[in-house]
Length: 205
Image 1: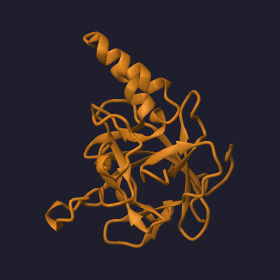
Image 2 (image 1 turned 90 degrees about the horizontal axis):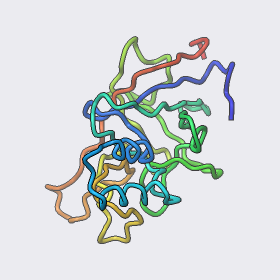
Image 3 (image 1 turned 135 degrees about the vertical axis):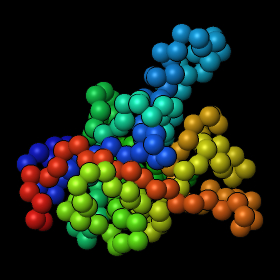
Image 4 (image 1 turned 180 degrees about the vertical axis):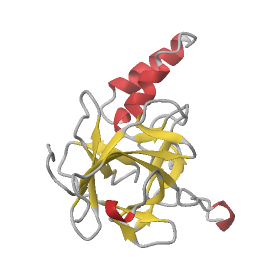
């Protein structure tokens, strides 16, 4: 899907704790470049890449200088966005969505209904024009649940029917990853660093 020429579209990279957000596909491909992998590890990563679901969820890169995933934010009114992945290959143009079972962030080519908003710290939902120059700290909100996103491990729901197989990757979820029932273990909504790559053609929308 092309949104070229629209004034309410911008692209950006997102980071948590200094590490870029990537698709698990990118994460696994980077892992396979390591010449010191054991045969067992290589088979595991290759199996992950061959899976229909596993490469599609959003995770954190291992290193702060890994190539980040490019996100395209498309305004859909009322300070809400549809978000698309921009990267060469199979998943280019796939839409960001929340998996309905695992509640993790992924990309899909289905007619997903997930929309998101951006909140500056201590402020209301914001459009691109509301941000100042340079990187901005934001909270990414899942509009479906009216919830900020949390950083969790991919096995965080193991006792609750997880659909993700491995426990080594980070995932982004729209539910509190604390299933212990004890308030002391409550998660904190993740703070994202948003770095704009391509600005809208005009900013008075």
